[in-house]
Amino acid sequence: MPTLQQLMVLREIIRHDLNVTRAAESLHSSQPGLTRHLQQLEGEFGFELLVRERGRFVAISERGKVLLPVLTRVLDSADELSEIAHEIAQGATGVLTVGTGNTHARYALPAVIETFVKRNPTVTVRLRQGTHQQVLEWLTAREIDFSISTLSEQPDPELQFIPCYAMHPIVLVVPGHPLARIELPLALEDIARFPIVTYDRDFPAHSRIARVFQQQGLKINIALSATDTETVKAYVVAGLGVGIVSHTAYNPVYDTGLGSIDVRHLFSSPMAYVGVRANGSLEDHAAKLLDLFLEACGKPARTAAGLGPQRALGRLP
Figure 1 (cartoon, one colour):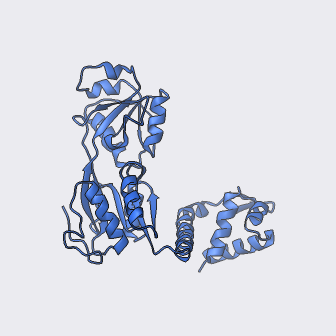
Figure 2 (cartoon, helix red, strand yellow):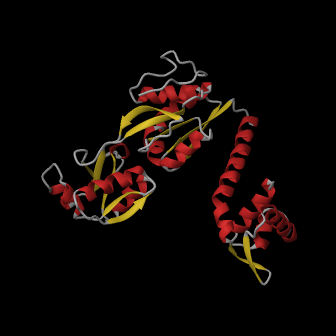
Figure 3 (cartoon, one colour):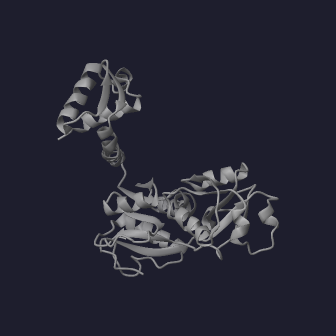
């Protein structure tokens, strides 16, 4: 069974471009010591992890590349465990983790978390941000208390979802852009004339948007795709194209230099959901934060509806 120390050695060598000397300095260890740990790890797995030439590491082996994502998850979880233990040792009475995407984390959660922290000052709230699929995987694996994301086309039957708010699509343009001068409502053909800046392919919104154009036989030029809305906005302002994002990510007060055009008549409006495990239960602090978020969305609080924080949530629409 590989040890965490052996995995850390491999990660550190890779982080330092396969330079064992620099990796050893980073870990306050010796070069022979790191080499020995790596050899033990390769012996445990039964194959070479790093390719050697003339006594030096020159590349990650093909088998090693397959293991890298798993190694990263294992060590990230170990790091998170140490951080949480440290927070508890420093006096935190509880730690809860919410998994979500960048848009929800930036626009939907700040006011809710501010209220929660004021009421529960010794509880640490952790936001774990990732793609839609990552968030659902974290929830299934019990790595987070609950999630806030859109649904996949085939939601996991082991999870339950509480509808929160619709995310209407808008087109972002700079002042004076030709689309801003067209008589509304916009047509798909109008948008297809310009390069598009939108969400990355790992996000369901990307395929939903592309599918609409494809169904109408329209070719589009996606000039740039990004994993967060702020990047999309920055490149729209820079003149790279027009943005297609959720209305929840746009605020005319703060987003100076940008205008928005409602295009919900062209694209579907996905719903944001809170996700919970089907047969799990929420700890007290997580239930309180969930209640605050649902109330902010105009939904009834689950604990206020008679579902105690330690009881499993019933199946919801």
